[in-house]
Amino acid sequence: QVQLVESGGGLVQAGGSLRLSCLVSRSTFSINLSGWYRQAPGKQRELVAVIRSGGSSNYADSVKGRFTISGDNAKNTVYLQMNSLTPEDTAVYYCNTELVSPQGFTYNYWGEGTQVTVSS
Image 1 (cartoon, helix red, strand yellow):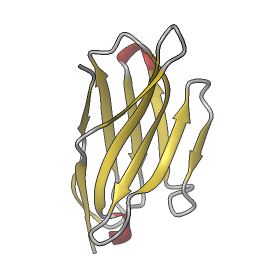
Image 2: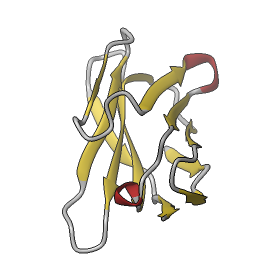
Image 3: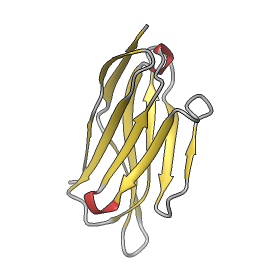
Image 4: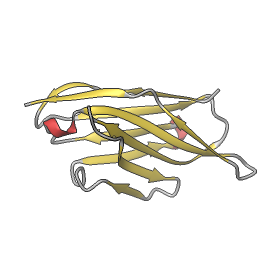
């Protein structure tokens, strides 16, 4: 059973930084793409950043220039470096990954989420 284990969330003051990690465990398939989403209270879940197996990435406009998504294939881990945090970044952050089998079938998984709280 594939598991996504997130870590790195917490409480930080505005202007501070956090780095989220997402370990994709128990998988023998390749990671096709991975992303970070977030959901603030009363709001819909939104895409924050995504990175593809080739290394290309995309970001939500609200985090461009402040957040960086990266991956370590050897460790099956995806990171989200968050700098210059603001209270508007407060949310539960979820890791998502799409795995691809040698036959080309894709499988999508979600982590349980990690809370990020930015105080003013």
